[in-house]
Length: 156
Image 1 (cartoon, rainbow, N blue to C red):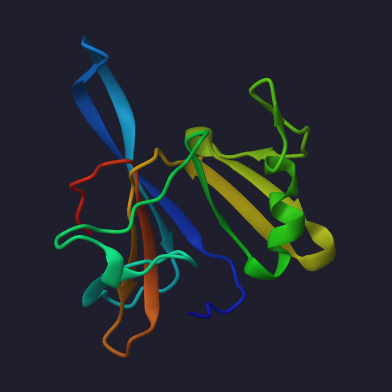
Image 2: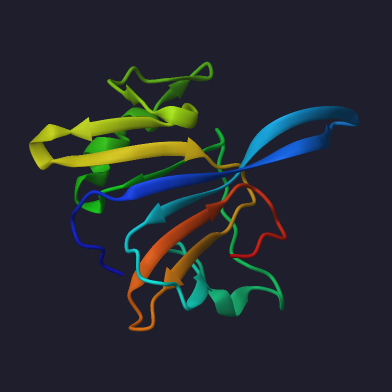
């Protein structure tokens, strides 16, 4: 899948209400999913996004490939600058990331820029167990990428 260079909108869906965590009840607001909007064309079909080592044929019937997120952070980034943009996230000592220059965005997201390659990385909340969905247009182009936030039963 190749996405042309450009500026794309990122949207976050929120859910609010009571939830249970380790037997305690809480009221709160949580990120339900994050969407990278590549095109305004209507999505006519959704498919599960696969990681490099994912193989749908090895999954039990009805299962989806899920991702792990050790620090509950996901990101969208320009693949051509991935090595540079993701470098600050490769070192975590005593629960703290390597220092990095960031731009704070709404909803707790961060933006890391590589001016030399004119590329960005945008972080968002992504708890383990989420699924990545690709929304395709009638021509088969990817119009959106949606990352659910650790919800095992989430559908696109």
